[in-house]
Image 1 (cartoon, one colour):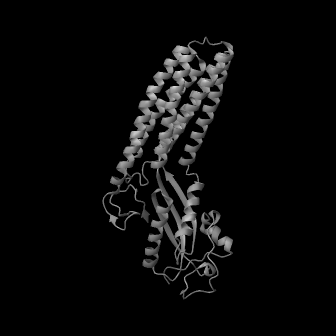
Image 2 (cartoon, one colour):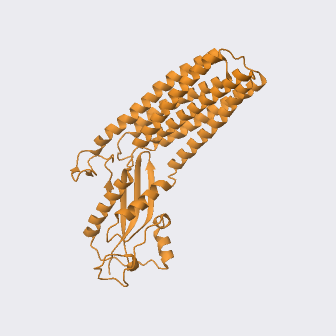
Image 3 (cartoon, rainbow, N blue to C red):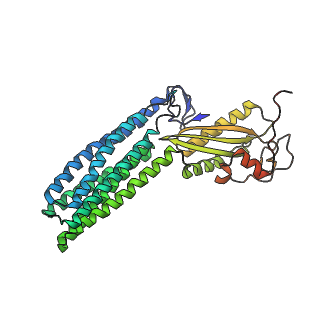
Length: 372
């Protein structure tokens, strides 16, 4: 088993890609910088969100606009979500322990689901207020000030959202990515509000204001649904096609003689931590120590090539002389037929189980007795 340079279990030997030296210090120390970056980003989100909330409610008091109110209601969600995100980032940053051997990263999926639920709730409130606005036209005033304030708040949200998504991708934090996408949706809300106020100012038709608010509410509802759906996929260990695709590509790139085929690939994420396991077919006559050395080197190269924080574990299977045409170990003493070619792996093959591989090859599983 190989742990990535960012793995969070104490006392694990870690090989760094830029050096051949092995660091035996507690590896959770290597996470302190990344955890600090996540927490600072979460704190910035909270402080900026609170400031923008005050600004938007001030704009609503000036204008009386339903669309501006919808923007302000979404900012309440931003602040509450930022508080919850900050708490989840603190918890997710803890190193793995005996009770949580894969770390505490799953809390980030709960945070994303919670934020999605809040967004959906805000969408319902906004649509309700917009409906009221159609039957009771709002008394709009000081639209120029409202436009200027809303534009400034929107630009601030655009900058904050870009910063959170960039930081979240760099630190593999679903919480920050979800928060950033929510903040960017708030920026789009502000643009819609500005468009609505401009239409009212240019045409004098006041029902443009609740119409824009209703559109904002529908858009927010879709954003909330997407966040909850994505978080549910993470909690249920849904297959990550992009990750497994990277793994399959790395298998072929770094495959060495003796690593014949790979199957039963599985990968799960616990927040930023990724656990990968698969079965590797090796020559049946190889001793355990030879297979172990080769597999460890292979594991290390694959996990580094994928650029993820986590671990990869390979289970070795004997070839049973069923892969001779694909095996490039030329000095094999048990070969039945000549080597022809080593075809690249496909995702469909890599995720097959042992039983599916055996059925596809038309073989039967055989069990040799341990003692005779």
